[in-house]
Length: 150
Image 1 (cartoon, rainbow, N blue to C red):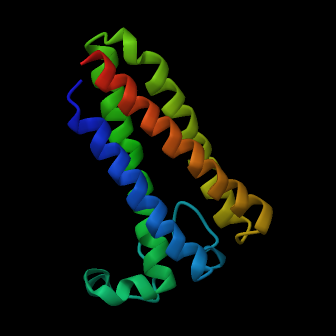
Image 2 (image 1 turned 90 degrees about the vertical axis):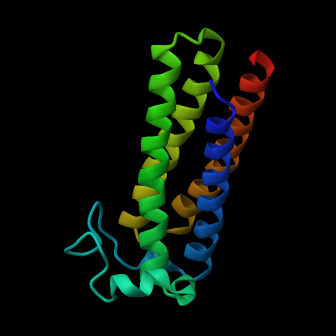
């Protein structure tokens, strides 16, 4: 599989963790404690879409949570695309690493949803943050195995 996919995936994971740091720092997980909607809509009703394209978006808890949620959706779709390419092309050497990566993505998603639903209770939120270390590690492992077979 082309090296650009695992590199891009790793970049997206680092970007997601960075946005997650903003979520954590602003206690943005304590607002909009519903999923999949943010309150009654997909976009937070206390804001405007235009504000999403301003640098000040990173100081707005509802927009930061929106970015964090939607980047997670994008990462999941990107993972499924990579997973499909690997299995369609029968790249047997990558089966193990892509499956491990999928496990940690699923774990992150579940913990992220629980973090939101339970108002960012410290134990669940800490588990969500801790599992991001495993997600980075499995992303690096996927990159390493991919470069080893190329």
